[in-house]
Image 1 (spheres, rainbow, N blue to C red):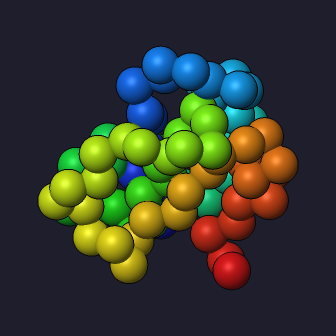
Image 2 (cartoon, rainbow, N blue to C red):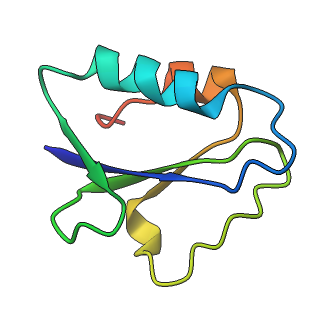
Length: 82
């Protein structure tokens, strides 16, 4: 499985987006390859928003593939099997 990763601009982060992404990558390292969000083969796109306003530009991304992560709790709860 290929999972795309996109980060917001980080203008006002309320949690460490990079650390959250690394936790997700570690949890699914045996099952998934993490790729750029622009990779057409990505089955999911994790968008790591640094705060609740979730204002990153998602133009051009297939909405059916997007999983928004706005907090550490969202990152902990992420599963591609839901």
